[in-house]
Image 1: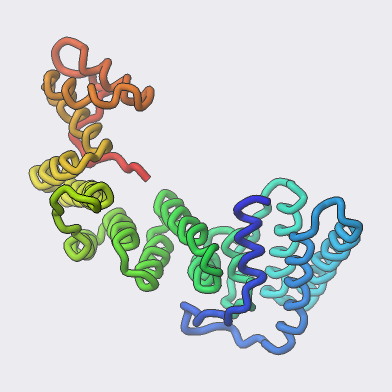
Image 2 (image 1 turned 120 degrees about the vertical axis):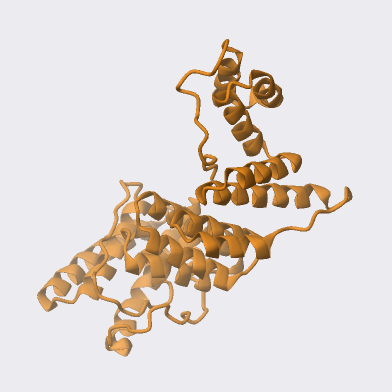
Length: 323
């Protein structure tokens, strides 16, 4: 069973009540009728996903659900009921994944409506980018069983980064702020600061980093984890300072990250030294990670070239992202 299917099952089988909606206004559906129509369907879907393929009931239940999805979508078209059509397409997408077919994605219906328990997980998995999927990501996290929370958080972060890459900064901010509101811990604070920096909210990102700065600890039993957190924090601080146009502060933060053992900081400082023609410093920085991959060996090779590095060497710019 795939991780995505396991997460889907864990949520469909959860008994927790639906979380408070993030949107203040939702369409007034006849909730009692919708629950009566769809709750048994999702229970049957969960039953089907649990059945091994060799089970005698597998084929008949699959056929029943496929026919049900088609009938409901046809009825939704006749009624111009977009939430119903969306639910029918979610069912068809879940069945297609169970069959190992190409991933189906369901378009945002364009109207807000209240999710039934378990539906947020389906929408988070199968809906195309849009307001509904963004809301579903956080509601699915609220509904998730404890064992499913980790994968739900990672999916939310991954989706936020994809939204940033596609220029949908508002969606990414919604998810990042939602994660931080649910858990104000170090990892979520750094992630939210990253998203805010990449959407140009430098002051707010800086405030989050100030609040999240780890203490400098002396070597001891907690030192490895503390140093890793300090390295992550300093990398984000460096990216923010470079984005703000403060290269000296950015280099200082890279030095802090390097002192905490950051390989990303070592690479960035080596690339900058190579770009500046400081071969001795670049070589010293690259020796430590020659076995880490082709990118590092290429950097080492550029450092060995006589004179200044070629134009293809990374210029003095903000540190590259290392998700």
